[in-house]
Length: 84
Image (cartoon, rainbow, N blue to C red; front, top):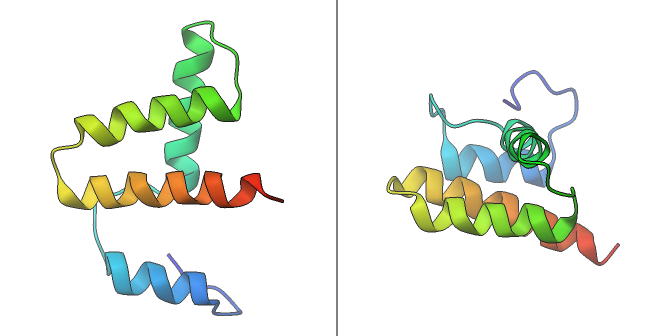
């Protein structure tokens, strides 16, 4: 996670406080990669809109509170970067 990072960032500290050391929760990159691969396999266009729609579907289907929080974090990441 963040333990091996040379520089600890506020984002790193947030991850530790929110998730702790949780096994089975993928990284944000893994989640986004999985969503992009699913969109490619289904022949859909890769865009912020299609990724957000897929994420919304996963958030609604999430039964585990930890996964729900993880997916919401990924959604916030995408929406935050939209203004850049």
